[in-house]
Amino acid sequence: MHDYDKSSKWLIQHHGDSILRLGGVRDLVSWRPLQAEVVQPRQLPDGLVEAVRADRAEPELFVLELATFPDDRLLEQVLRDMTLVYLDRRALPEVLVLVLHPKGNLRAADAQELHSPRGWSQWQVRWRVVELWTVPAEDLLAANDVGLIPWVPLTRFAGPPEPVLRECRERIDRQAPPDERENLLAVTQVLTRLRYNEPGLLKLFGGQGAMLELPFLQEILAERTHKLIVTVLTTRFGPGAQEMATALEPIEDETKLNELMQLAVACPDLETFRARLQP
Image 1 (tube, rainbow, N blue to C red):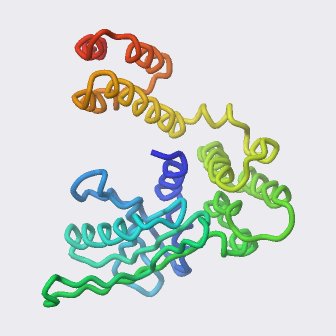
Image 2: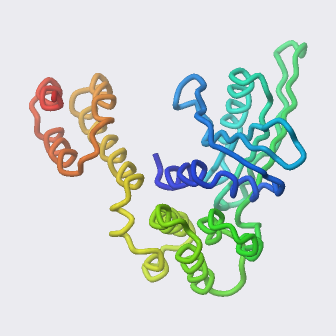
Image 3: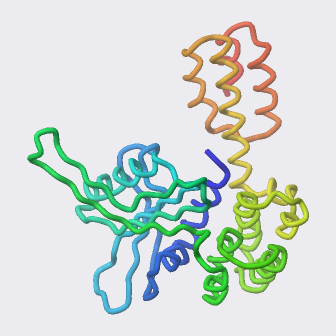
């Protein structure tokens, strides 16, 4: 899973209300992230949030789908999200798609019409799309919501980026709860790298070393190593090696994973590798 995905999902879990405000929901009274307990993990939406708005007695469901770039696969994902949540909760959710960065002339779809082969059945669905690069940075900064700060580097602003990024750092230092400060700095750096790659700018949020010490980013590195190990084993021993992916999932220790990578390259057969995984 891409590090942008991990960072975005952390923000959904901890600052989902801020993302709803990005989508134009201004009258929140309360909110909470929900476990999207529908079917299989690969089919889950990025986030499912229950929120209570002013002057409304019943909570509303919001599906949050975050895309690094506009992508044709996003259309299928949104349709799946809406369908799964409706089947599970018996309520049609509000859907917000947040697209982080442009890609050529591609645009994210905000509607779809589906017909059955005979035309007897028809679906017409719409959802809200926010393209982050079209949102003025000053709007997010003026909201005085620290949960919006990680998105600011991807928004629209005039002039060089450094003053804006310094303002982001100062806001996090000043406003973030102590137990969230380091994670907010890390996800801001991750999202900043989507647009800028200058080391000096990234160091404003603590540098690469500080990022790698955070648990959710260590998970990213572990997942990448899992995939590399399985790729090596599959190349050497065939498709049957794919089964090792499940056994590798709980392992996050960097030293252990490095040893397993070396073993994947040198082991004489798959059984030898499997035996080393046994506790």
